Length: 337
Image 1 (cartoon, one colour):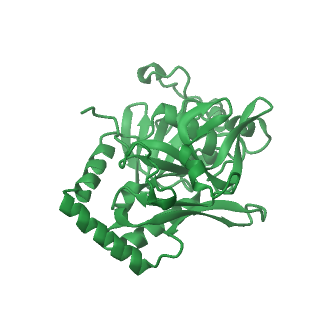
Image 2: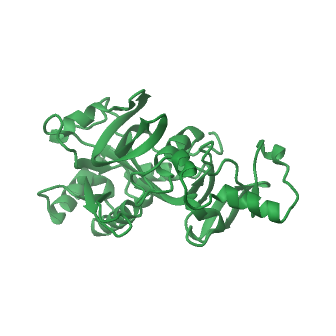
């Protein structure tokens, strides 16, 4: 087994509440007020819709604001992976990932484990360089309970990515509440992703949208817990071991320092790591637009000014394969805007 390569849940599609569009030669994030399920393939128009997207809409063109889902794992931390994350905005490479107590950071001397003070007080997290970043993995069910993994891939998942506090906080709370009240039978609960809206002062009283995880319409908590227990007994009789699946997923995630590859990181940076997004679930302006627009000075500019005011020895970036980088507290800051 390869070391240093995190084994993440297999993804067969994406769940999004926004998209990246091209305007005036720039690729800009655009908010939306509905779910869109896509494949993992892009063309000139963007992400190609997944066939199950049309199945879930009651009629063509209808807004999709709820999705019937089930979870792959009983452990809430396996279904929803959330960290404070800083990406290199030029390459999509993760630079620092933490949980508010400790972090793993790429430095000039290699990977290091350091304290994580959270973005609010971390000097490297200014200008939106570090955000909470979550990935929720679910199985989607079409009308009538038919699995959306059309090839019978019951271990495949759709992933919902977000940097929004509202979505991450709500999903984390729901998962823990459901885990507690069901006796740890999260993987057996018939659930529903719902799109909710709210207005805040920061959103200038315009709606912002976030994702919630609830029981399906018309179902009671007692009913779904009883159904989950019945299904778990049936699985055990057939030899299916949910605890072993959770353990395998946990071990696979622990194999790598970071979960995102460079290819995935580029898409994440383009869609979420912008400077004018109020909630993070749908970004407001592209990194390039934020760079060109007037406003706060970027982190890279601040670092350059600091180096000019107080010259110091330039690190030998060739040792880490970088041709153009700066340093603060030993972390590589190449390409940050």
